[in-house]
Length: 168
Image (tube, rainbow, N blue to C red):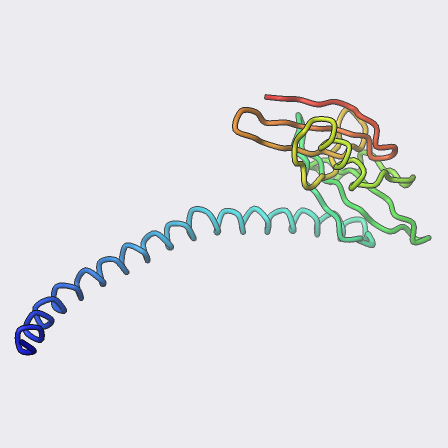
């Protein structure tokens, strides 16, 4: 009886080895596809944004304060947070030619308060806001997507007041 089991095992092992190798090749192809088509473009995009940020910082010799956002609307703007010579926080807006478009150094509404307001008012789950530039004003910009709609929320950066909202 042991001989039959051993003989059966000897027949099964040579069949399993090519199947296992084929499965590993399929997994390798899938992982390579994901790396080349998802991770690499994402990495390149993030790297390009960092290059844009560094061009602005170096051109104007800014004291960067760890916030930079590329905001795409009807035009593209770069929003950067810096500290001026008096160590005061300043938000600056640059266009794609690296020209200063706007600057704001006043008080800023708390991000968590605006997120709380959006989530309670619209019964959604916005988890983060970025800073954008709409109609000549700095705004908090948030978005949320459910199965049926895509939501965009805009609140003023200074007072946290409602500006506009879209549901697509």
